[in-house]
Image 1 (cartoon, rainbow, N blue to C red):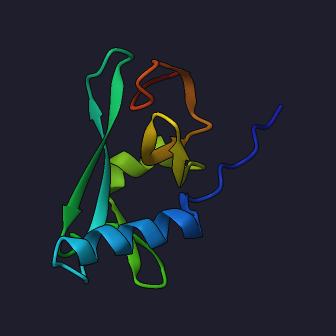
Image 2: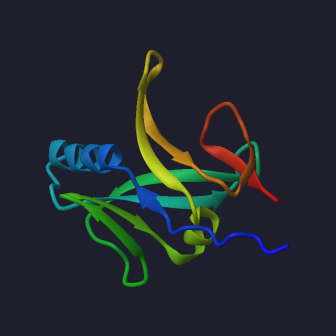
Length: 115
C-alpha cells in the first residue's frame, strides 16, 4: 500500500503575524523565526526556535505578510507535512508544531520521536 506524500511545511497566518510582531518588538523588523529540529530532548528530537536576521542560502523560507520562517534542509526532513501555529492558553502563549511524523511527544510540547 502506498503512503500518501506529505505536504510541504506550512505556517499559519496567526504564527506568521506573531513572528513579525516579535521581530518588530526586538527592533529587527526584517528578521525571521528559525525553526530547527535538533537531536535531544526527552523523546529523541526537539524543536528549537531562534530569531535570525537572514536565511541561509539553502533554507526553505515561508513568508506570510512580513512574517518569515526559516527551515534548514535537514530539519525539513522531520518537518515535512508539519504546521507551525501560535497558540494562546491560560498557561501561556507559544509556537506549536503540529507534526504528522511525530509518533510520540512529551508534555513540554517541544520534544518528539519519529518512527
